[in-house]
Length: 312
Image (tube, rainbow, N blue to C red; front, top):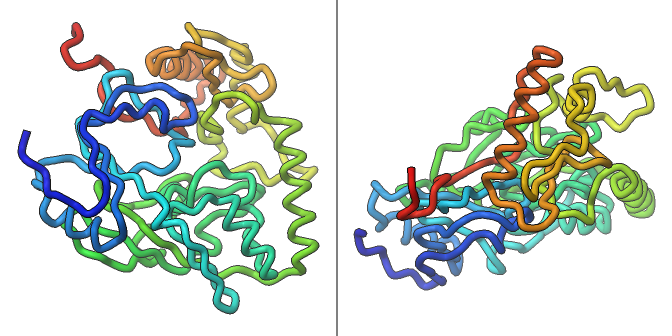
């Protein structure tokens, strides 16, 4: 393989990724790069062979890494990218800052980013996937983001650049968001914290938060998140069509669709990535046969199915 640039941060070869994902599955990446700061990341990508793929990885909360691993440099932002700064009604957070931490710190300052409190993952992923719940989305409060392009330039991105949609943006492959700024509505800190406590209680009562999962497995066919309101309808919710297809609690190997919430794919212990993805595909087929709806994955699946040197 082509020699890689020497960064100031940490560069590891053949790094297994299973312990970096919430589902605890997957093979190794060719390289894992943990940059020291944005300039380190920019210099590294500028000098990296353009033919080498780059994959930005957050905390692995919405990810299946296939068993054969990933032929790429995986960029994982760490301690140098988790700062949270408040200025007036704006909140600027490093891409590695956890969504929940950003919501709490904003609430302390009387700023309403409460929808982030129950979203697993970090700010970089929230921007990339337009994360949202209870009828609110990252796009609603997004002001700008800073990113390093695949060729090592530091750029500022606007909402027009990203073209936010339900669980999607137009962030180019290999670009790494390292910071985002949000313009947040104001609110009373006590009220905001109380609202988040209520959201957490509701989540814990309805979702398998103590299991190895990656959050919602499939996007809602309706094309928007649950609103959390009493008048919310369920006809085109992913969990409802999975339930209707008889796939609540369905299993394949060590993988299972949760009995508590059938849109949660869980590793019951010893599951492979193939078990998890295969079960998801079983669910998609059953739902299509049952209701004519083609579910779209919300969990990202990356990498090779067969380990290096394996058959096939």
